[in-house]
Image (cartoon, rainbow, N blue to C red; front, side, top):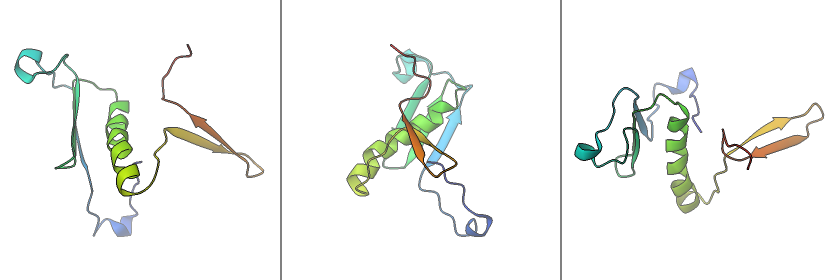
Length: 105
């Protein structure tokens, strides 16, 4: 999801999205119109993810993944999946699907 460009590519690299994380900024529901102090805002026009009120770095991932859930199927004919993969010694692959941190029912 977050691909680190090679050193040689940084000279011409132009990011598609900007992620702003302000964990120390707490929203005020009466002023900001939020339900609680933490927030995640996606602006598709400006391609900005604004996160605040939480130091949980998984929110950064979730913000971009939320944008990709809209962008990839519509514009790239690609279905995004929340998963990871392990490759065995013989080249066999195991995929693990699901949200991180989910508890069993």
